[in-house]
Length: 123
Image 1: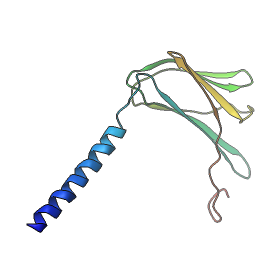
Image 2 (image 1 turned 180 degrees about the vertical axis):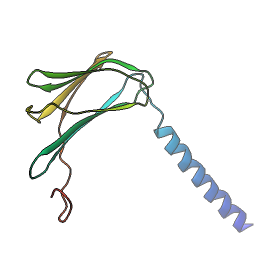
Image 3 (image 1 turned 30 degrees about the vertical axis):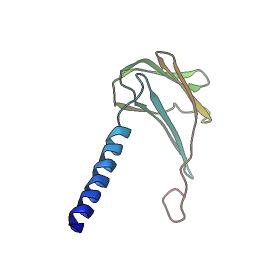
């Protein structure tokens, strides 16, 4: 009897955990865009990229990435759940990037730098 109760409680906990994980991955907004701007400074060069992710329930259109200094890239449309990576052109300041999309989305994101660990390549 006790074993059945323990198994029922454990099963309930597992079911609740799975339900919470599934619920957290369901988009809650019609239009949502995440921007991850990364610059990785090496000793001889700098790698930089901007990852765009459509985290909404509907496609995003007219996406433009403004790297600053008059340098822009038109991305176009990003379908639901899609990701797109763009690279800034050479010579632009890698301070921040501005991403606009329809309808009425504007995100200004500073570039982040990954943590360097001793003994790792590039540190």
